[in-house]
Image 1 (cartoon, rainbow, N blue to C red):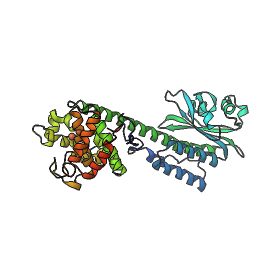
Image 2 (image 1 turned 90 degrees about the horizontal axis):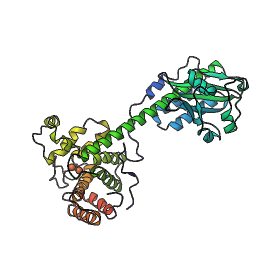
Image 3 (image 1 turned 90 degrees about the vertical axis):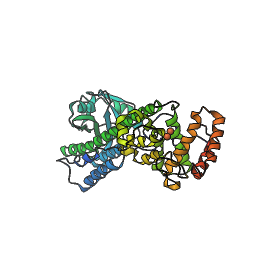
Image 4 (image 1 turned 120 degrees about the horizontal axis):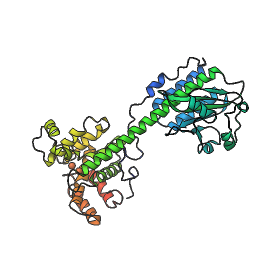
Length: 395
Ligand SMILES: [Fe+2]
Ligand SMILES: [Fe+2]
């Protein structure tokens, strides 16, 4: 059996590969206040475009798509030949192209502009909009991007993108098709720039939270591995094999995702064996092996993101025939994730006895089949046995 598609790496991540984690709270709500320029033209087409983009901020996490949509709206509403959105680098010294319309976009995306240089650099430095209706008469205009792209810039309007007073980047439209750029145009482009800065800031916040979550998860896995002997690699192997079995059984996406977290964290209760506060809160006087699922639940309950993993963790030592713990649940009353994780846990115990390679796979298949209908769910056994016949890369 090939490596499962959805888990591709040993590294602990915030969510199974290609599965988006739940979006943390965003600042998109503030977009409702953003597109309200005093000088916005009273065109219903423009208003509709702004509302459409504002609506997308709450429903789309694809930043490139959103920024392209904002750039294209700016170009169309301001009757221009081209648009560009440049973002500030992390060191705040340069601007780089995030969006550039036209065929030369890929060339421009390799180029940077120092803050303070050119017209976009001036806007970024002074945090003020700028209109240049004849680039030939403006000394700041260097034309380096025109040379690279083959585009000829005759006029431009550039506005800063700010979020809570901090520079995020600039938005510009180029070559007004008729007439010149006006004060009204500045108001409209500034509104679009506000929407773009909300989209960018949302994405950054989400990435930061994902990054934080995956690091905390990695930290917790390390703590679990140190909680008792022979635990090294157990959380990740449990997550991988549980997800592979879940996939073979075609569990729902949400269950699949929660299986990953349950696999990683199901034994965190061992960490609390010597923690008087957690023991007291669960009413346990002296912690024993059978208490670890309840202690795991005690530690993890309240973490909204893991809500669906909690029943899997709580019941991962139940038996299909009702003779397990802590709830003595029987058959389908045991959550499917717990039935899967329960089998994986039993197979992991064989590994902890020191078995490896073909001998381990053989004993695991024997153990699973022997427990079918008694300790384990027969459907889970069937899926696991098929996987264990060629466990390379899964377990
Ligand atoms: Fe366990
Ligand atoms: Fe375990």
